[in-house]
Image 1 (cartoon, rainbow, N blue to C red):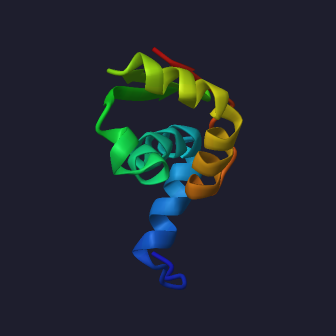
Image 2: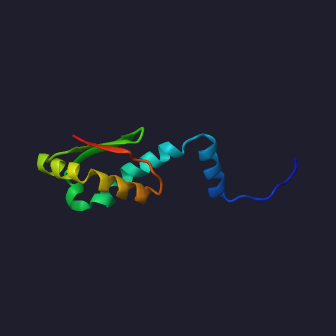
Length: 96
């Protein structure tokens, strides 16, 4: 068995994620996770659930007024979420 240079565990994990094409799924999970940080506590407390699938984030809210307000600021939210994730993951947000 031939020895090669030692790799850090982070490099091994990153390599595996790229090899198995899991980057998109991981970034979608990150986008769902950073929602609370992007919108803040005041808006997040009205969030019932959120999910991301194929670049579309679906957010269920308990306030119709807030839903209308967020729909008007949809493009800014998409930009902020993608910046927080560090990749262009979200292409659309649907508020329900």
